[in-house]
Structures are given as structure tokens and as C-alpha cells.
Length: 119
Image (cartoon, rainbow, N blue to C red; front, top):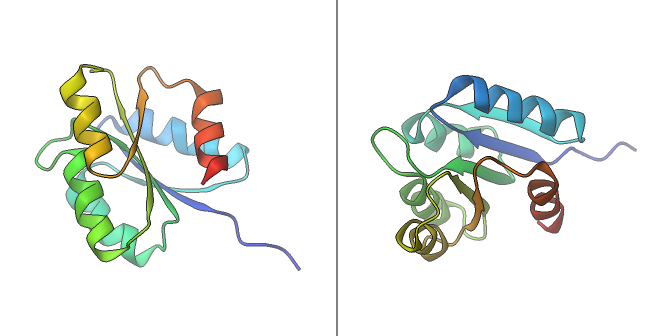
């Protein structure tokens, strides 16, 4: 019997980056779903059954950290990774305070794979 692929919701307002990351994750055996805003991601995370969330920190409207907080209210234990080119203490702390791991951009695909596999 074939096991269900882990579904990763990739959220980034840079559509090309989100699609590329989803394609790479697909080649590594994950099922990837893309959203280009936190507002788009909220319902998708619930209806598409996302197992993991990979989101940019700086999004138009709601931040990636706020997205993590809101989703974890509805799906306790949801594993999340927040990515950002901004690696200042405030950004990293906001991601971690929301309950997410932090990954600097540009994304190290090996580090991302290890984080996703650990989930």
C-alpha cells in the first residue's frame, strides 16, 4: 500500500520563488501546495490538509509569524518554518515565538530538507 505524501503549504508573495520551491519539494517526494499571501493560505491550510507550513516572514497584510499563530490555534502542533532574508534578532524571535523554526533566505535546500524530514 502506498503511503500518503506529506503535504507542504508554501507561502510566499514572490510567486516564482514559491512555485520553484514547490517543484523542488515535489522532486523530493513531498506534495506541495502554493499560496501567495497569508490570507490565501489560511483556508488552504485547513482544506488541503497541509502537514507542514513553509512561509515567508514578510508578506503583504498578515506576516508569516501571524499566519503561523493563527493556524496553530486551529491546528495545534502544525509544524512551521518561517523563511526570511531579514535575519535580525526581532524577526527570528517573532518566528520562534509563533512556534516556527527559522530559515534564512536564500534558502539552503539541504537545511530545508533536514527540517522537513525532522517533522
